[in-house]
Length: 466
Image (cartoon, rainbow, N blue to C red; front, top):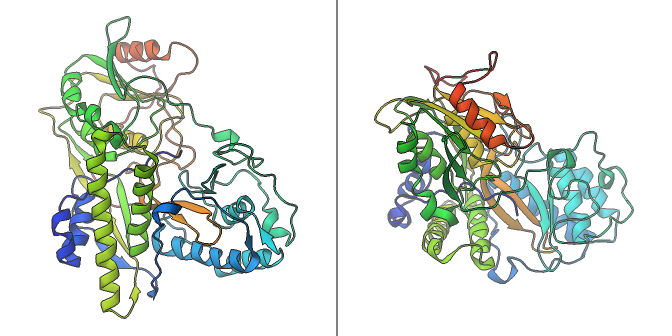
């Protein structure tokens, strides 16, 4: 499964249904990082006829099916609609392909009498591909398929170059098939999530505290709720290690609270752009409903998921009602926050030296934590490059109605305030550590400091937009 999006629980959901303005501000604007200043609101393109992208409960993991070329072209148009109305996309890039690219894709679809779900998913992946570590295509059913959209080096797009390509090999097992970008490109394989509890505090052989945080998933909320208290204890130690290896992300609020509990310094918040639309709300609700339907949410976390889902569905309903009042069209609105400050909540500065140990398994909310922590004087990042899947999050799920092909795309775009993060490359460590015994070596760095020549970073004095 892809990393969980950084779920935000709307803070005034009870008032959401009463007015569109209260709903948008409570469920979205105030869910920005640490309730950042009110974002600028800028409508995108002209309103388009409103469609429903809600997945029926029985189809959340339904079997896909082979479709005719005419049906495949209609699904292509629904995919375009989902991207135009819900995908945050990367800064500087259009959320949807150009009309020319879509016309080429439609021509390729007309060249075949029928399209299997895996073939259609691959074609759509090639059409909508972007350097986005979360963007994915596939389908559910007995042999589920997931194709990442991040482009591989010099990868051809045979489905678009040839109107009658040879049939692709079917998926041979869940999530894998003949395509070399199924799940993830070989060059970008993520490190596996390490075993153990979500949060564990141990000590190295030299007595250095080592805090392992394996996930930020809301499903682990009881354990993650203790992170601020643990940070308050660790920040007074002469040296400590935060082991984030294998942490694929989750709810960013848990990560942010941990970082802010380490220091009293002002930090530059991540720049953020969120899509407000019926499609984005319906897609995020689809994602939450599928997690509940699959049993991925433990009983103790279900009430929060149900609350979150209800707020999203109220939001979608309110936006849809607003569109009906305006003649059946609903514009997409992007809410943008840049240059915001968040202040640390500790009683003073970080007193000792903190080493954050990362690998290619650190992604999404884990990388967002690093975007804050790297600004704190006394923090050193060691290990390997992180995965590079942070720029677009808050995942929405869509299922094309005729084929059952699924799209998973982000409705929020983020940017590292220091400008060091690169999507698909990730954060580069200050000190590289590979091989065995990396925890002990990280603890030694925490005690002795970085080698000469290792980069050091401190909090910026200005978060003005660049």
